[in-house]
Image (cartoon, rainbow, N blue to C red; front, top):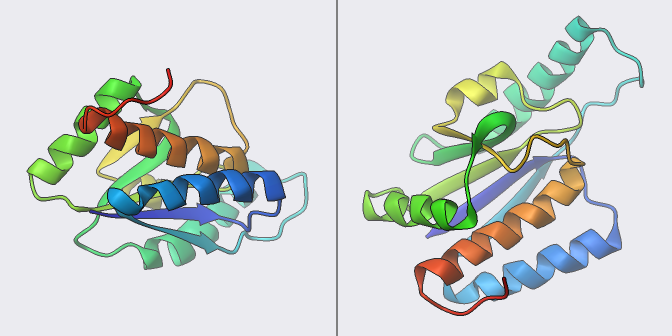
Length: 160
């Protein structure tokens, strides 16, 4: 299985990098994981809704979407997406591979979220919570949950 994690912005915090690297290393037996960072759009702190939409469209429309191939099953992380338990998420991953989707792309937006173009391209919208998380932290949470899904699907022990 090939898993691609597409995300906006560079990860700067060493503690996030170390945590993500640990899970990516553990994936060796389960899947090939690639993390692709696209540049975030520099913008002032206070933007109008129209300006936010323009930033999202430029960032995701031109950068994220260019990294998604036609054969990839796309899961967009979105607050309004469907919330799953870890077990249901594991089942979804297993079902995808069973039905020929061995190329999965997870997409994490920037601080303003994802553009409508990305959400429309997504095959599934996933929410980890009604809370808003920093997109840097979301990377770590996502790789941990994907790793957990593989452990669950193989019936291997993992901390609760």
